[in-house]
Image (cartoon, rainbow, N blue to C red; front, top):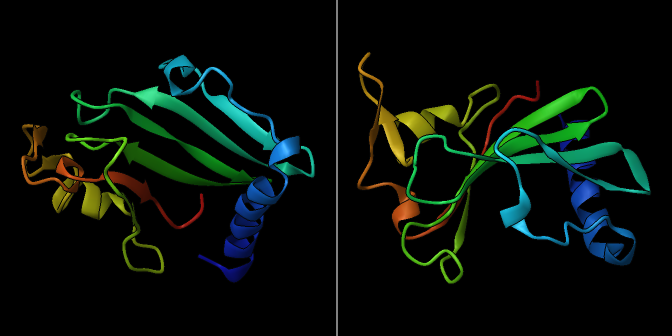
Length: 145
C-alpha cells in the first residue's frame, strides 16, 4: 500500500478516536446493519473519508460476518470481518493482510486459514481449523482499488 494511502487510513482511524464526540455513531449497533445496503460512517472533519459496512452471509453462516470498504476519496480498501465461532465478545481480534505489494488477503482467507476454503471447482467448504474458531478475524484486501 502506498505510504500516502496508509497515512490517510491511519489519519482516519486516529481522527475517529480523538474526536469521538463529533463522530457519527451507529447507535443501534451491529444488529441494525443490513444485508442489502451499506451503512456509511463518516467524520465531519474528514469528509473525503468514510467506512461503508454491511452484514454478509459470506463463507461462514454460523457467525456474524461483515464486509465493506474504507473509502479515501476515489480509492477503496475492501475488508471482511468474521466473528469468532467460540466467544466473540471475549476472543481477541486478529488483523490479517497478506504480504505484498499487491497480494490480496483472499489468499489467506480462501486457501489457508479462513472460515471456508476453496480447494476445487465444487465451491467453498467449511474450514474446521479456521482462525475464527478462537478469534475474531479482520481480513484487509490490498492493493487499494
